[in-house]
Length: 103
Image 1 (cartoon, rainbow, N blue to C red):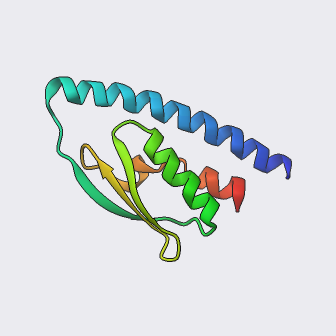
Image 2 (cartoon, rainbow, N blue to C red):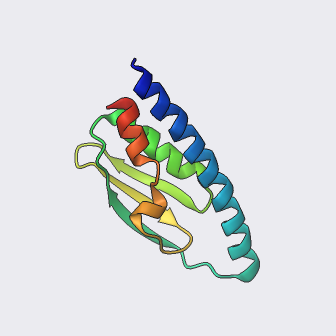
Image 3 (cartoon, one colour):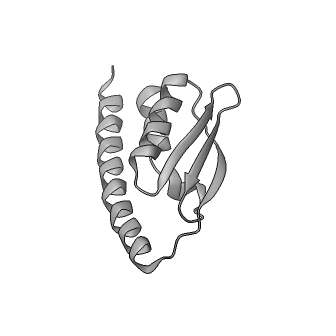
């Protein structure tokens, strides 16, 4: 394992923790205000290895307000439930770090 991959692993962990904390505050605010509009979206991932896709799906589920429902490794598609409509970049900001760390 190269030093760069270790660096991306550390960056992934920091980005994941940051997004978990940020999302927890946003979800608390949405629950208190009643501003919830759940949707299910399909997201195409750039990740090719099943282990990378699984880590991405688990990272999505760890982030409050999002839940990975299904993963199709062959088509590289994730079905994700969110409590409010979000852009792809908001749902998976850690995807590039996983790619550089594992692929």
